[in-house]
Length: 91
Figure 1 (cartoon, rainbow, N blue to C red):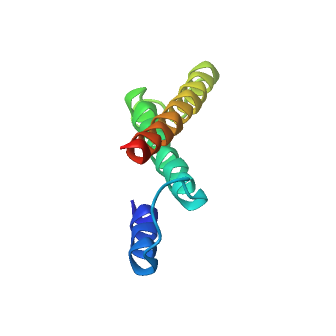
Figure 2 (cartoon, helix red, strand yellow):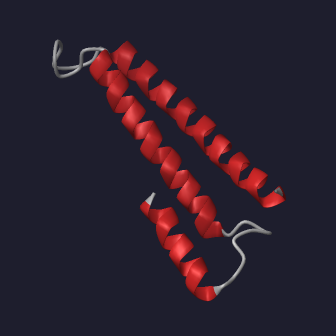
């Protein structure tokens, strides 16, 4: 959120268009946002599995599954954010 705010402030001061083509800093902000979402979902899922409350360490199988789900969620969130950027450019 802070990254996009800084980008919007810079675009507002410079007067350059936001789209067409998408700027690399906007794509970086979308990737950082997806990383933030994936990390928070991974932590929430780990707590739901009992990490830190019931068990001091997750079993290897659960840790691998958690990592795989986190990577898949990150990839889908990046795809979603980038496709939303493309939708706003064509509008």
